[in-house]
Image (cartoon, rainbow, N blue to C red; front, side, top):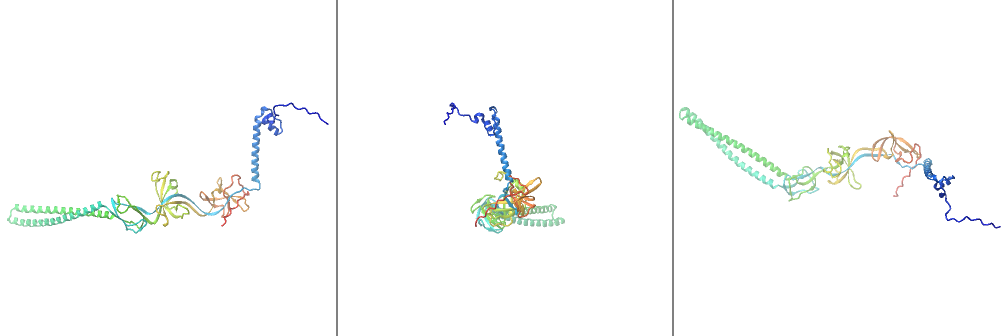
Length: 444
């Protein structure tokens, strides 16, 4: 059987209309939800409504997933730390320079020439040892002049002694003549005028004797003055022999034989090797926390340094402003620490690190600082029990450092605490948690 051909639609140059053509985005949404499309004049707000619906569905799905994850059998993964006994400390770190006790630089007593250097750097010397001999030509000239003046005064003294003896004999003779004249005038053998002349002669002789005695006293004072000058010059000459003021270690020799050194010029540096000190700088804010007698640890700068113990012995009462003997850009306070005993390793003048221990606790129970939580006045943390459940534990704390906190009540050694409670899933008492296995130790 044959069928008559179906009539064909007349050809058209335009394509068939699509749902977007028939109603835009509103039509598409209407078709998706099985609804009749709205008239084309309402096509704007349905699009916004559809976008909001999709966003709301996405958020609801995310919340449902998180809720399911939180309530599912997979507990949150946490990192734990064992409660152990530790040594806690708060400290101030600084850098300093090693010095010896009584370390000092000896200086020239005047404009001198170094005549001889009798020691070497690094040599230990006893107190009173001659270290250097100096020569002061000006001082030597003054000493020579004073010695000549002493000889002149000695000659003058001898002449005054002879004159004093002569004046004394003149007085004696004048006294004898006056006594004889007094007897003769009484008998009438001589006149009163002759008697008066003899009396005037006696008075004149006595005046000359007194003047001679006065000159001799002045000469005595001049000789004493000359002797004082000689003693002073000799002492200054003795200063040109530079002696060790104590049992010392020669650290540095800054002058060599033949060198001309001005007054107060540096000659050599020495110190007491039985005492080792460290001069260090503290930031002004840190200096407020430091006090004399606080313990310190001093170590050389480098890998695996050996620490040496000591204590603070001096803190400057005034801070140094930047640029005032201070190369930094902040105010600093100079302090000095002395080691408990000589290290035998620290080199004077070398840079070292200094740790001032503000507070210390030895062998106390401690946990990481991040484990602590606070709820009002309560301080608590989370402990993982043997069943891998989180248990809230109220604790009392003691010394706190940047890394750890002392626990004085609420924990026992060996308890495992959650080091950093998760922020995504608030813990509750009895919640199951998962702890990652400890990392495997490397093969020997």
